[in-house]
Amino acid sequence: QVQLVESGGGLVQAGDSLRLSCAASGRTFSSSAMGWFRQAPGKEREFVATIRYSTYYADSVKGRFTISRDNAKNTVYLQMNSLKPEDTAVYYCAAGGYTSTLPKSYDYWGQGTQVTVSS
Image 1 (cartoon, rainbow, N blue to C red):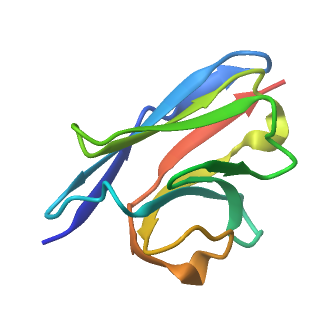
Image 2 (cartoon, rainbow, N blue to C red):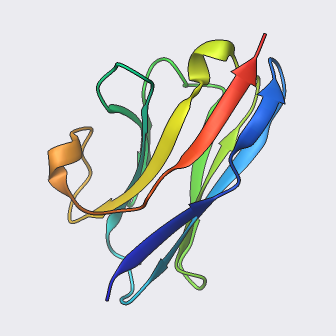
Image 3 (cartoon, rainbow, N blue to C red):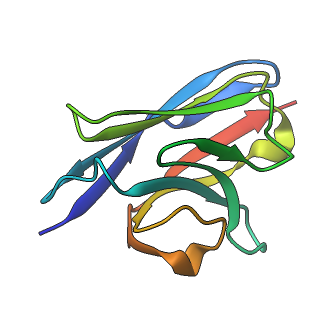
């Protein structure tokens, strides 16, 4: 059974950093696109970053967030620096067959981890 499990969320102050992790199990995702999305209350799920053979970021996080992966650990990370209150959301990890900014392109999803940034 395929599982994606996120961890690392929490409550931080503006300007702080957090690193999210997404551990995959059930199959190897070394050749898959791995993405991070987020969803704030009352808003649609939005793209944050993706990685397969290269990386791609939403404009809102470019220069502040870094996505990376450790294929030996079947894990993808999201390093978030200079956090802002508008980054507050539930962050989801996803895995799919190709790089995309669209949630529907991803086949597997984690349960999400809450990130709250206070001002």
